[in-house]
Image (cartoon, rainbow, N blue to C red; front, side, top):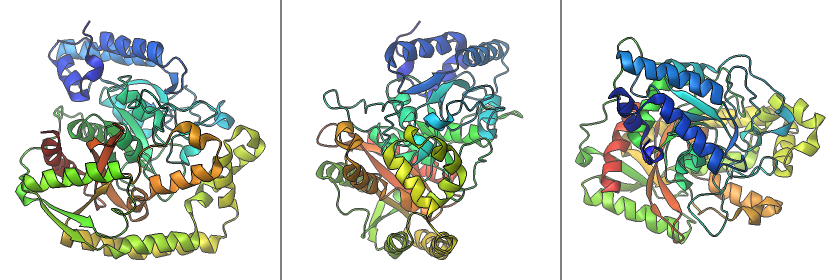
Length: 459
């Protein structure tokens, strides 16, 4: 058995299975053994699904022997955030108050991934109810960022366990969700590629919600090619003779236009973040990518709108989960409890006022991006603080949450698709992400562009 399967991309593992070099059942056991050995505190995976995983892997191995593979990812083991229903398993939304909830059937996107042959290793940790970008979950334990051996730093959330499962080699890829940055933030802090899909692009049936108007499904992966293949699987496009990875080739960097917003998102950055992100932009320019600065007034208008009306999605979360949290409020982490209760105090006029304001701003931003180009910015303005500094300090928690969310949430409020790419390290060796933001529906264009830019950044 090879010793480096956990370092390979999902597509490389899939190719090995298809070529008869890797047995899917052995690969599954390899990852399950690593999880058991490394995740001893069970704060990366809340629960594994070994019986399901081995059954799916055995079926993938047999298909490979018969030359009947379902997709280029057939037999590849991945993790799922603990808000995706998998039949017969607990799906608890990272919350103790839902720890008895057993799913009746697979979420639609889980079913699609299964039809593409992906192997479900289990459910990964997350912020309770996905309602924080930091990744702290004292009730189940917070998985530490693996890029600092001396200080236990934030992993990013809310897909905390999913990101760490990939960065620590406990899954070939992960499926998370993104309401304000919950795919992109943990991907960026864990040196991964993360895709935020457009709202409504992927079905939310069987996905435990935070915001009925902003929740999206998205992959966290080792590179853009893996993210594109996972996106294709989640869209249900494999099968019927389609067993090929998406073709991301043919993009000329010299024909790409990037716009750096001159307001908000490049301001107030930690020094190491700014150095890494601006260095990445300089490398892209040197390779021929056209870069210009552009003022994006819609960003400032969104900030003013949310400052005036408040976080309206808190009201949506309260409507979904208040009965559960009020039945056992002592089981909910205090900052999350406070945020959800805030939503219960928001009048309908406030919620609708915010939504109407965003609906006016969104088409203006999309039109602007078609003129100036895809927007590029640091995924996160700050480097991850130490977990211990925030876990019991509500004010520090709030301040870090605001700055971590600042850049990513714009894409959710303004219905964009976005992609984060690893672009360097900060002063402490923690990964930094460069985020590309495009209008809704541009997923495939953004992935092709991201693949071209990735090649430059990795050169």
